[in-house]
Image (cartoon, rainbow, N blue to C red; front, side, top):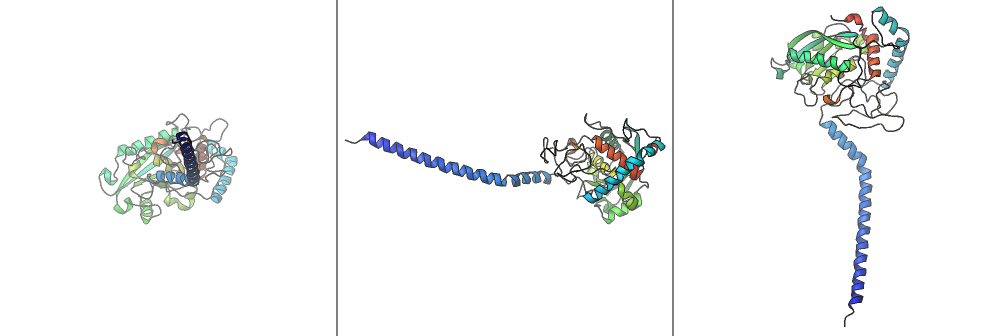
Length: 343
């Protein structure tokens, strides 16, 4: 007679042992995978962020300012604010915000000259119509008046179109930053004066646009102004960037602002105390992103700020401190005063 009970117990013991071995193996494999994932997580995150960057055209070719230069400019600006700013505003009939040296919202008019450079007479050749130019002026005024967001600042600046010229030149049309074509076009077309905003539309491929800074005017006046790809104007064909905010961004540089990610996760970043620190440029519209963590860097990345690299639809505001800096920089280096109004 077979002892079925003994065989059953032996078989059960074998199965339990086999299961235990399998569970142990699975646990070890899972731990190994977890360790590998942990080791590669930062690289994967960077790769994902880089992929997001690669599907967007580089927004801005304006050169970053070194920390040494930025500190020197800041000292000069502080001295100007203490000694000459208010007197200069009062002398030119300007008005200031209560308890501040900053001029009131909408009190300063900037004259704008558009230089349309194309390779032919069709819109697709860069010959943008007057309606698109006026739409861009309207967008500048909306952006700088704080119309896009309840949290946006009404800056002192308003923009008025003073003139438009059109040039058909295939070599100028493809100008890049620092090229001979850029120098030639600006030398011939630019309307003189540090207070005049010269905007050149062409078809550069390396960047959507670039700008000069106000403090460079005294030495590089002929190069002054903003250059943008013509497809970025309102109603243009540039994916993600066709609401006119490339010119809003570049004009911010022209008035003295840095990118929001200037200096990364180090103080004083972009020298605007109310824009949270940002490790690097943001693309698309990464809501809730916080690239500079820790108590010393409060707040989420300012992806909705005009001086980041996000999509046009994501950019909606300048901060109060940015407004103050633009006002001081433009007054000190461009002497843009209320009497420059083009009325």
